[in-house]
Structures are given as C-alpha cells and as structure tokens.
Amino acid sequence: QSVVTQPPSASGTPGQRVTISCSGSSSNIESNYVSWYQQLPGTAPKLLIYRNNQRPSGVPDRFSGSKPGTSASLAISGLRSEDEANYYCAAWDDSLSGWVFGGGTKLTVL
Amino acid sequence: QLQLQESGPGLVKSSETLSLTCTVSGGSISSSRDYWGWIRQPPGKGLEWIGSMYYSGTTYYNPSLKSRVTISVDTAKNQISLKVTSVTAADTALYYCARGIRGRYSGYELDYWGQGIQVTVSS
Image: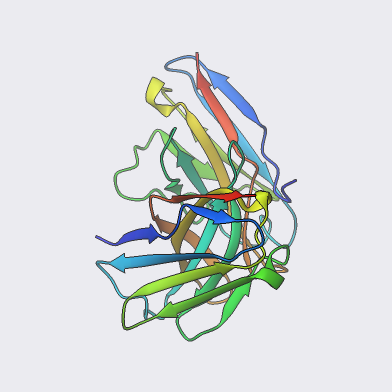
C-alpha cells in the first residue's frame, strides 16, 4: 500500500482532457517537488513532468502538471490513443530520505 | 546522451543473494548533483524505490528492505551495484537503475532510467 495515493484507473475518449490526482503527506508531496512518469506497456518508466510542472525536452505540451496545494495533478489534453499507459507520481520523502511513488494510474483511451 | 544498462542473473534461488550491476555511459557517476539508485516493479504492480547512493558514499535505503540491501558504486568502471540478501519469491521483480537529481535538501526527479532487468526468485 503506497503512502502516495493515485486513482487506480482513468479513461477518456480521443481529444478529451483527463486529469490524474496524486496526494500524499507533509513529508513528501506537500513539501517536495512532484514528478510524473509514463510507463508504456513493456517499457521502462519515462520522466514526463518534473519539479511539479516542467516538461523535459520532447514531451508534448498536451501534458501538464500542477501542485496547487497539498496534492498534485497531471493533465493530458487532446487525448490520443498512444497516451494509453500507466502513470506514476513520485516525490522525495523527508522521513525516508528517498523517493516514494504513487500506486499508479492506468489510463485507457476509449 | 546518458545511458544506463542493468546486467546480472535473471534467476536466483530462494535464500541466496541477488546481485545486479548498472553500467552508466555518456556521463560520470561522480557528479556531485546526482543520486544513483535502484527501483523495482513486481509483476503487475507499481514502482518501489529500493535505495540510492551519492557518489561520496552516502547511501539511503527503503526501510522495508534496509536490512538486506547494499548499494555501492565503482567510479573507475562507472557502475552502480545492488545486492539483496536472503531473497524470497517476494523479491521477484523488474529491477531498474536510475539517476536522481540531487537538490540542496532533497532529491528531485529520476530523469534517466535503464531498460530494466527481470529477476525471478525460484524455490
């Protein structure tokens, strides 16, 4: 059971906007940067969003991150079939002195 | 472009020691801004941070695994190693090495990952 919570699943139709939430505690999500990772079937996780809302080079601007307060969100606009993947949030945990991951959200494009 | 490649046996017997190596190319593991570590993913499950090491030798381990895990670096070979002792079926997983960006007071993101290596613990 993860200390960081994500919904296990999310879905949308092509072109729609979907959001995935990520909540934790004062020792991780609330006090440290949040990053998001996309894991396509059979591949390694790939950094999608870093430091709450920054996109690495090559990541489309359809992907955006925010951390308005005590939780974080990943938004995907203009949903495409190739976005079907598992998405994980993560943050450094001050108690652990290491990273904690959310349980992951499986995104289905209907 | 930084590349990480995990290697090691894909099958380990129960109660024995799992040993993996991650070879880094395209950059040095002696950078002061980086953590180097391991993450695993049991079949059909999510990601679990195992531990990380700073090049100076400081290590951080997940408390759930701390008593059985050792992470070390070989700067001459630009490699990071992982050892997990007394393995059981619960240690069967895909093991990834990854680079973590080190901030002033905490880690930031895990920006480069290896492709992963499947390790199965057999009885």
